[in-house]
Image (cartoon, rainbow, N blue to C red; front, side, top):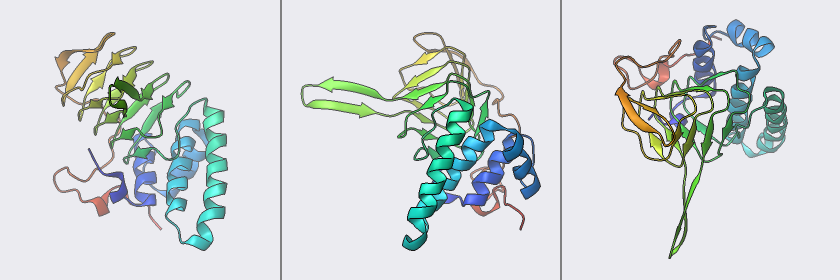
Length: 214
């Protein structure tokens, strides 16, 4: 799973734009902002996280403005994707309605999420107290409509079928389906529409990921 902190603001925004088929340039980003409500949510999420890293005099007012914008974009897209969520470059959300993501979830690079997906926490009640686990999606994961992933990791390039309920870890390149979710096949070709360049693949460095032209 890619470490989202390795990438700069324009790298992640450009990678997200590539996933929507618009290229990574400024014109493509502006076009998506004007016409794609799902992209607007990821853009304001990236903006909040960028504002969080600014020097103290600028951080508070800009972060407040970005958080307000993010609240509006979430509302207009009818989804809940907290700005604190760690998300790798190249997130694509399809339809978006009803998407709910826990703020402590971790999402890798080139992940695809459909409408109604829930990435939620799992609480284990032990004699020693409550233990909370958060979901983690690896790179290149495809999660179908109304699927639920509760407190477990899903390996790189997996496919989670529609309406599945995943409560156990899923190994890399596995198709999981059903309630409870069970492995049903091996992924021969990952389902990543319009993949963005991602560090870790041969010949790609973090600095080269979807740069935004000046």
